[in-house]
Length: 434
Image (cartoon, rainbow, N blue to C red; front, side, top):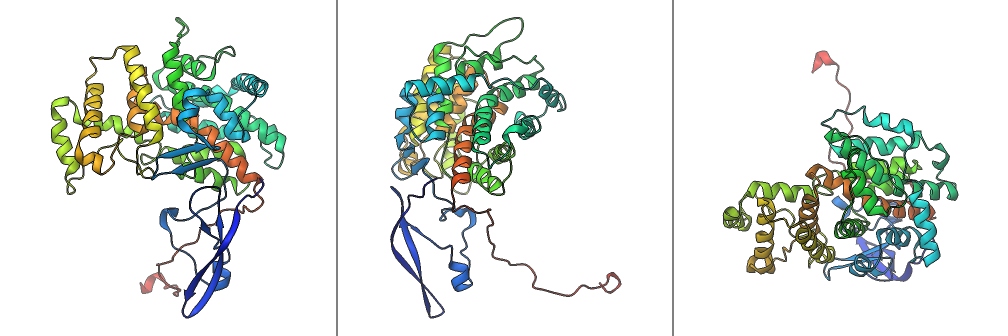
């Protein structure tokens, strides 16, 4: 990766009467950054930034977020334009290669992905090693890491060709693994991928077809699944992406790195947010109870929180939610879902949140997790599968970020520092004297 960060000036730091200067750099958009790589060697001090909320861990050219403006760009392209006009495979090419593909490039990339979708025959034995009631994300963490045991020829991170092959394999095989995790959890036979089907349709068929009866999703459902994948493909340096980069900085093979990202994504504060939103709707239960829960949400002393509203990064409307809201309503109309009490609660809650002065003032808009959870439930997915679908989509972003990190000459093995508050050095006390 060619470094494009530009020098802008210097920042001064005064400590105990001594003044030190550090370079200031600017990116193409967004805040300037202070280069503190020599802070410790110059001052003997570390910075203290739990959660890395004010720390740039890398230079990246992939995704840009402006939470205040509600902006999300993939390689400079607004997310709504991509979701409305490009297929997920086209977006995958964009994220991993840096530019939108030509017609020929897209055809070749699509052809390659379609022909990497199958899994090694022996690989299916891994699924049968899990209990039937295992969470699908537990299966994903284990099986994706196990890919490195089957595809030895693409684990050399120093070989650009091997890295490309590994990237294509993971993009292609992730839907197959995810569908198998789902089928295994419900006791149904695995359905093999079909090369003539597009990415989203192929995934839906592997999830919902059975040997006795095929499944042909409507164009509306395939389009919705494709958009969900696009909207979740990357989101800058979040917890799971940072995990993938940190694992990759040690030289770990790409399959292990992506497996580490899946493990991080599993957390309820990250990828499990749409599952949490559905669980909240279940807790509310019925439309007539919404006023009671709205009151609880407004009470700062009440532990209840509305899940699926607001976002840590976006202080404005989540740009992905705007697209997902329209897609959600298209799916609900297509499936003519009218008698589901949870969806009734969701639609009424959405209306209140968009009109109620309290929510509007605090910018607690419905976020993508709210709409994607409702959409996936209507499509027939259990809540345990929501984060799995997130992982399928985010694999593309993880791979792009991992590849960028490998090619960045300034990257080193990740080694965060700490502010130590434990006991200073002390002598061992024999057990009979304690």
